[in-house]
Amino acid sequence: MFQILLFEITILFILPNNVVNCDGRYAIKTEGCVIPDFKPFNQQVNKYLRETYNMRVCNQGRPALMASNSTSIYFIKDAIQYYDIIIIDDLVCSYTPFRRIPPKLDGKEDNNFEYLTTIYFFPYSDHVVVEDEFIMVECFYKQKLIYTDFFAFVPLKSSYAVRNDEDFNVLLMGFDGTSRLNFYRHWPHTRDVLQQFGAEELFGYNKVGGNSFANLMPLLAGVSFSELRELCWPENTTYFDDCSFIWDVYKRNGYVTAYADDTFEHGLFRDSGCMGFKREQHTDYLFDYFIALAELKIGNNKEGYFYNCIGSRETYKVFLNYIEQFLDRMSRHRLKFFGSFFETVMSHDSIFKPKISDTTISLFFNSTLMKKILENTILVVYSDHGARFGKFRYGSFQGFIEDLLPYIAFYFPDSFKNRYKSLYDNFKINRYRLTTPYDIHKTLLDLFQLSDTTQTQTTNIRYSKYYSLFEKIPENRNCDDANIPLEYCACGYSTQVETISETFDCYKSALLIVDTINKMIPQNKCLKLRLHKLLSSRVEFVNTTTAYYTVAVETLPSKAIFESKVKVLKLTKSTSFKIMGEIARLNRYGNQSECVKDDFKLKLYCFCNII
Image (tube, rainbow, N blue to C red; front, side):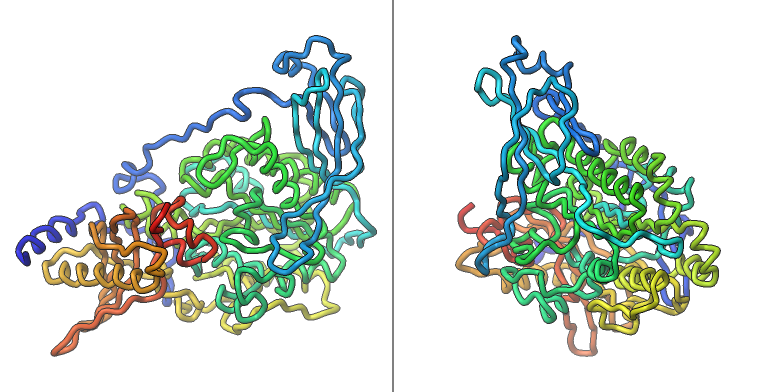
């Protein structure tokens, strides 16, 4: 038995394709942190990058019957032929405004709506002016419902402070699951546009948690997952009303605020059983309540977790159209604003899917409206992490590193650079220093205070070790200094495991990973896992007695792929093994963990007894 096992693991562990070769390129190289850099395409990873992505057409190819502009809806005459309309006078349409109803009882999800008065109109008439924020359109031919659509608008809601020349707007544009290098690969036109107008990337931007929630809370709230639990959100069934977010600071001081996810069910405040908010919505404009009903009623072309289409339109285009409406409204009325928008549908499930949207997104950033907005707006284009799943992630060292290094770039207007030259000079230095989402939060606080120094503003941020990008970050800063957990630290890099003695340490580490998972999962709901394969392993030697092994394993019966960092301490008479931090899931769990779907962590590991 021992000899068979020795032979099997020796074959499984030697992975020549994992040899580290970054051609002497470094993203950053400081006293405290060295991060390797890679070419987006190279011989080591090209085999993982050959896939293409083809998205099915929306609504089975049937085009929209209605369209909208910033104030109205109107009929698309060329679409009549697709709806078997012969007698136009027999076609009648209506629109019905709808709005959110706050949950009446604790523990109820924030997903309730009420419809207001329905207004009927003849679709072949001129534009129908709409004064409401969200509407549902229905068209009937010979009294039979043949068409449903949803439209979002950005009406003025109340009196806001007009922006003066000293104020800078802040616009956050987030894209889920996109490393810096994958941004280069699949949004090349968008990157070209960003570079042309002067956006500047951070090359040492390191994630601090596994998933979106764990990386966006530090950026938006200034705290970690565990700190959020302690401060204001003790469990998933708790609403987020008592938590403080960066837009609250801006809203209290006269800024128009907006927040938007492009998916409701898997948006930031509702994924994994989160309950959203109970009281009034947390920003002045909130797209999430629109997309909630639109997904439910006319969402289609669903792949994985997300609807690619809302009716006859791609979801990402509906999302960008809403952002354009918001920016146009702010620009025309000279209102100072803080907007946070986060795209998930086009970039979460595949590293290849973003390419489909590249032309549209590049045109969005290169529009006349955006150029006008950027005259007095600080723009942050960013991601939360790289690709967390798939063969590229677990099959290559570059995929491992890219997961740790999400894309981020800042744009500052010339007026900002001239007015705050010393601060901008510090920012340019910090582009090549180790940075985190906590630092971005602190920078956003600084941006507000630069525009209005009447109040000192804070949210939840709790550590003096975090830096604004307008402060010079020490060159000796390392992951421990920056509060980056060891398993997510991109500083330094490991070498391939090659010797038999190290192979045994890897095997023991693999068994420890599986055993640790089995101790975490509830045995009455989840099947016990067993080690099937060891897919990859890398080692970092600290000294003659201590090493860190990063090990990826496949388990049965779930075929789940996990990765963890294991500390191996070799003493004279014994060797100890310890899991360092979290165990990551590297492939999708789908409905395997349906029985624990509302538990952030268990859903990564559980293979339910009954699926």
